[in-house]
Amino acid sequence: MTIDIKVPTLGESVTTATVAKWLKQPGDAVNADDPIAELETDKVSVEVPAPQAGVLGAHAVNEGDEVEVGTVLTTLTPGAGGAKAAPAAAAKPAQAAAPAPAPAAPAAKPAAEAPSETDYDVIVIGAGPGGYVCAIRAAQLGFKVACVEKRATLGGTCLNVGCIPSKALLQQSENFHAAKDEYGEMGIIIDSVKLDLAKMMARKQSVVDANVKGVEFLFKKNKVTWLKGTGKIEGTGRITVDGKPVTAKHIVIASGSDSAGLPGVDVDEKQIVTSTGALELSAVPKKMVVIGGGVIGLELGSVWHRLGADVTVIEYLDRLVPGTDNEVAKTFQRILTRQGLKMKLGHKVTKAEKSPKGVTLSVEPAKGGTAETLEADVVLLAIGRTAASKGFGLEEAGIALDKRGRIVTDAHYATSVPGIYAIGDVIAGPMLAHKAEEEGVAIAELLAGQAGHVNYGAIPAVVYTWPEVATVGKTEENLKEEGVAYKVGKFPFTANGRARAIGMTDGFVKVLADATTDQVLGVHIIGPMAGELIAECTMAIEFGASSEDIARTCHAHPTLSEAVKEAALDVDKRAIHI
Picture 1 (cartoon, rainbow, N blue to C red):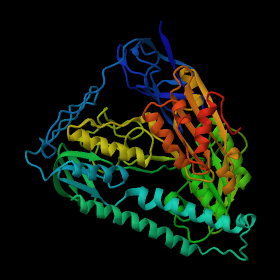
Picture 2 (tube, helix red, strand yellow; picture 1 turned 90 degrees about the vertical axis):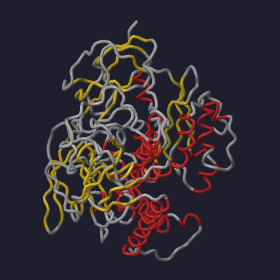
Picture 3 (tube, helix red, strand yellow; picture 1 turned 180 degrees about the vertical axis):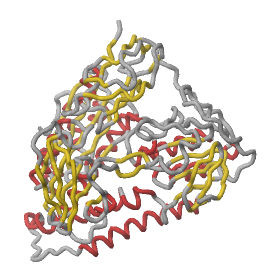
């Protein structure tokens, strides 16, 4: 009996996709969850996994074909899966050789002969979370390591103009909003609350400074050499840094990503800004339009809304935060709308015209219809990010890129050029700092002959708005598409004693477990401290725990984490407090 593998649900308003690449071929033996094909739409890239172990049949469609949701891509004959990739052969760290490349790596172009003697064992290009963690772990394993970074400070986008400064402003704006609008309900009367934006920005910068200096300290502690400048790949074992030749046995590219552009919307980081400019505004805009209803747009839109801006979010799809659980997304939209954020879902921006008075946007329905104009003082363009793969010699060196400009790698992060590897945002997968960090550790350990590995089914994702949204594992939509029978347990924060005590009762915890084995397949949380609560759920998925395991674990009282326990109990409809 064969199983049809079909085009999965891609989003509420997305009905077609392009077959970007076949990752497995007819006759290949695969394991459950092995990616077999990559699909692309204008908004997302989706890897289609094997529903269970077996052998693939013939391709029903070709690369480049446009296919509708539900179209059969190929078939699977259930049976034994493919063999697991073997770890690299053990070797002394200081003399480690590159791991044996896995099958299907792209063919390399002819390149200069690898150097017989090198300046370093490992050179990492990029000092963001993936790069600096890789460099430190490689140094811990005994390698002589250098890290190339062109910024004046270490830490990449995340620490300098991304994760860290945005979280500082999110917390500061939450405190301001609470003091102005919420503390009175708790009996804390503040006669006058004023915003000192300059001081708020200074405090944000102090947080950034502490973090980037911390990475510099860790480099010194672990004897990682910082090569300041722009790196360019010259071939196996060879790069230049601002034109100066440097050699290494192994090169790891961790160049990260850049903000994605939009035709007709020209960024100047003053009136039309990316996340970088949105973190540096010198005044609170009266009206802000956010293009993009994803993580970055909603986080920074929330910051400026709390500080006094009238914020409108324009999203191409008919929902917020694509890829999250549909029920969570709908609840999230209702809560943000109640807070005062305005939503224009299913719309697109076709043009932005700047003037001394502000920005005029041309907006029309994504499916076609009458256009309208919106006025804004500041426009935040936040439609996603693209791999930072241009400008440092990748294609000239023979390193293969996919259609989205990402570096093509095999299961051990090897590129098409021997001795050169890539991790993080510049390769396929979720663009998350912690995903890059895990890959940085994995490749360092593989180069040292260890079994470096990343479980991509246990990578959490968090939206740091209020309330927070956190997710790990499969959504209900994923499981329905894959034909997996599952059970659902839910528990609302309105029934949690700690949530009531702190006055934060919006949201719920949802646990999805296999209907037969009770193994936890996914957890989705919207509510207070969701980003912290998801760690327990990620560990449950990592270790193959059941909902019963979570339910039988003693959770301190009164804590928000009890909502996770109760949701796990509710999988078998035996929650206590509801």
